Length: 121
Image: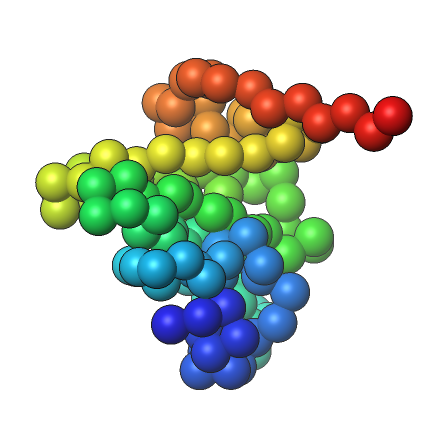
């Protein structure tokens, strides 16, 4: 399932990180958090793409009004546990400048393994 198909199927937009499954294996799993006081709107979503048969990358999006409450850590941790239960290797990628995302990854037990730096000259 592509990002566009997933967004259409779930009726949501602006969750590019959680629904990035454009690769050969597509979206392997996803979980979302609904807030009843907001008419069951999706306020946070974690998803994973099976980048290879063994390596599944986790993505997270939290709606701006709900950041800083631990929702990202909760969902990423739950999805990481499910990936491990299925016998796959979860990994988490983020940019150097996204400190909130770094904190989520570290709080969920991920550790930095490599860094990519782009230079425009």
